[in-house]
Image 1 (cartoon, one colour):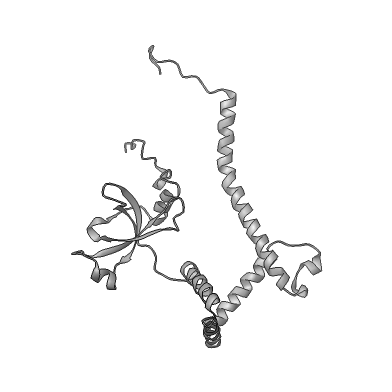
Image 2: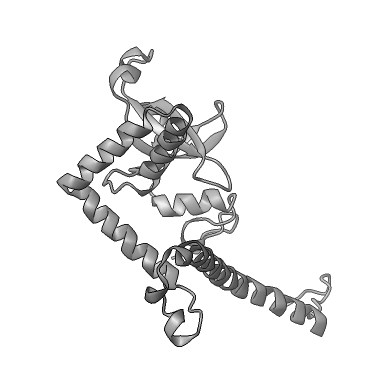
Length: 226
């Protein structure tokens, strides 16, 4: 209902409604299409790298005459599982130690191998350790707040040499929009405010640059009365 002093709201025209529907369709289609394209591209890249290494008698294309995308991925997964199974055994561990001892004698290759191994172990190593909770900290100075992820309590030399009277907590402060990079900082326990939101919700907030809040709630809108 409008008052005599308020102009009547005009309904959006046909072009405006079509534009809104088009943009909504883009929002729905784009993530699905990009995901399918990315998976399809990665499968093709793996096939192009793996299939030339597979003997032709094991390649289904030799029998059906059709290049089935994803066959190389299957070979890669089977081979990777087999290598992992062998590496867990006594003979596999001995071979790995012998190969690494040879690599350690090669100056340039040693540095490359060490760096790649550390990255692979960090990303793919199976471990039960994970970030504990999301938190708020004042960073890069007092009065400016940032989201962080609590990892562990500081120990050893870090805890002993830090000039603080209480316990130190190690906090990973991610960057936007790429939360895999960031800073490892150590804060006194009293300066770390734990949040109720999950790690996933906090990561979404960081990735979206503050546009996606937990439970899809817009903080600028007033809360609904119960």
